[in-house]
Length: 418
Length: 174
Image (cartoon, rainbow over the protein chains, first blue to last red):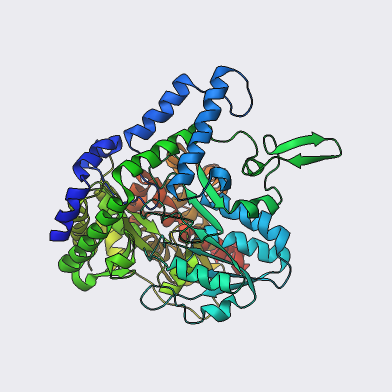
């Protein structure tokens, strides 16, 4: 209990909640208890205002016009690129390609780098705990090129079993893995895996969808090659994410999508591409969303990512304890039991009641949780469950939200117990 | 606003807590057909034994939420003993019940099934009663759950097709 109070001093949750307009609404007559931030986060007013202000004052297509507003919008877009690059510790904005989301970032690498560099029989190492976004693009490449996919297994304690990592990496060209599981909350030992991959001569791609919103991230300290993350899970708008990659890798890669903006010259017998990162930004980009993402990283920086992480570790500890104290063995949590080893995504089953029924009853108390397979069906099979309920925490959640979850689970019991 | 009591009617909870006709039948002679709901991972296997144009026995296995489980349980009770024509009429009645608000609420109507429900009126349709199944009509107020309720019914359509015993008025009268 004291740890939670301690973190409340460094991160004023009450004030944070006031920053997010949607959190003041009610659902079915109850205050909104939003516990689905791993799916998408809510947006602070500063993000909403930044986008509205942009549309009301500077909306013009970027990199095209010579008029004042076009200059302003172009500058706003490039300022967003610089701010987002800085936020993840990138040495320069040159390696920061805006994408639709992480899914597009990974597809870009699979299609462009993979298509140009992988041959039949080449190995790519993944893990059993990946989101479909970091599985299916590689399976598509397996179908297309005949590459071999290898999988790092999950250990019984919901961490990665790295016992045979070196042999799995033997001869591999790329290792692609998540930094934090969207199902288990597990934080993977990124730097250790990166070092092993590099020692084996493989490049690394890290799925940072769940990491960047919650944990201070430094792509240079982690020695990454490719890194994808998405805006809407980190207080930003939907429709914008990013691929960061070492610029020399991007320069050697063929373009991904073809179209306007990504070219230097087009003649009827061929084309040449623009410099990176523009080479990978075909068509009109979501520049207003980039402005929103800029405001989001400014918001998170002002709060302080260390404070966000500290708050979530404390609140996760509180949630794990509260679930156990109130519901004992009726709740099974799928994920590491040590809060420092994990993020705030808590997947669980309650008795033998289906997660759809659990989430439906929780909704009646305004408690929003995700139910289903969380786009990680191979992992669900590994866990031996068809679906789980997932409550996920963020900087605007506090103990009262966890209490609402824990209390309303008793309503589920009242309705369904046989 | 729809409340939980609209969704979780007592008869539904009863079928969920005490499912009827759970088990398996030897296939063959029964046909075994599986249904999946990729969104939530629900799965059901129906074992349907049709003899002389009549559903003489039906059992089911699988896992899912209370709505899919109770709907399947009720389906087996309602379909058992029906002729092929009556079983198909029952499916159309039930799918009709589930599609009343489906288009309006989700814009995600299952065209094929609506068609089946739509033509039922003009057809020389055997008289069938929904009985307990009426309790599931509250599901249409929760659009994302409609697919839970209809999973086993779509599976039954496949199973009936697979028996190869097309409706024949002569055998039905026998």
